[in-house]
Length: 314
Image 1 (cartoon, rainbow, N blue to C red):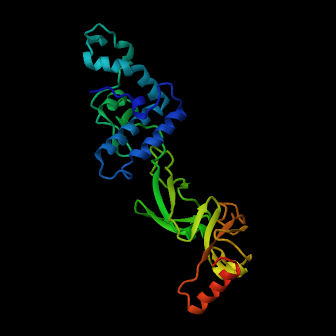
Image 2 (image 1 turned 180 degrees about the vertical axis):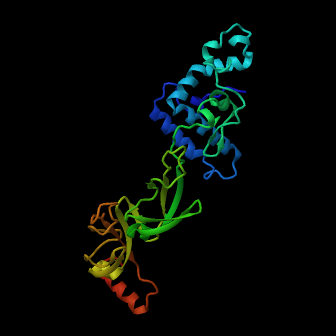
Image 3 (image 1 turned 120 degrees about the vertical axis):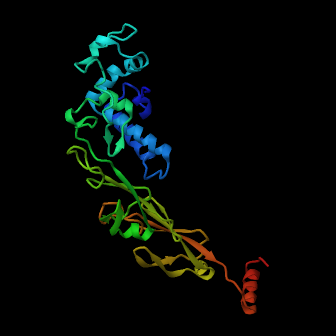
């Protein structure tokens, strides 16, 4: 069977730290997870390889054994182990046997190990199948359960107000409370809501990513909002007050005389709530959109002509 380069599978150097291995594993596990790639045999196989590589490289004892025997394993497989622990090439394997009957890798054909129900390769079983006592090919080391991932779509108003929501993950109804001000793409972690831990280890987490639907009325930039407000030509020219609907209710604004198209008004504290900071809000920017009158009557046209003559523009 072929030698597996676990470092290459995770895309890390042999000198990688435990933290670097953990980060690489989490990234690849999310990328190739079966829930993300349904009915994709290639992704499923890659997911198994990534889990297998992490099972070895995240365990200091397994990693030490793998680093010690990895290169010699390929040589052992190619040339075979001779009697009394010496291969046909004259290489003395007895230094690695550790009482394993001439096999430096702890026994072949142990039935395979598993990780969250995923079968390990024959290579893993050959190298680590003798570990863990009566468990055969299964590691008895406690391990955290698998993290689950889910997405939750919200309207802008739902993200503004927050509140309780119920979502179903792996057939289980879960009630959560959304804090006002969540952002598009923001991910929260619910501990102990993922896969069951192994051998008494902690359960995994549920990672929920929020997706905020675009809103026809508002553009969100951080905690600030921008809103277009239609204003009649007459109010833009003469000024006056106007009522505007916002996410926090109706407000009355004052429009200065001779306001031009695109004029911006700032309403402090009328924007989006700041996430998990009670009482704090961004600002709301109102952009005046001056509306030209349509379907003019003859008297109205005459009045406009008079205005044009008065301004010397006729």
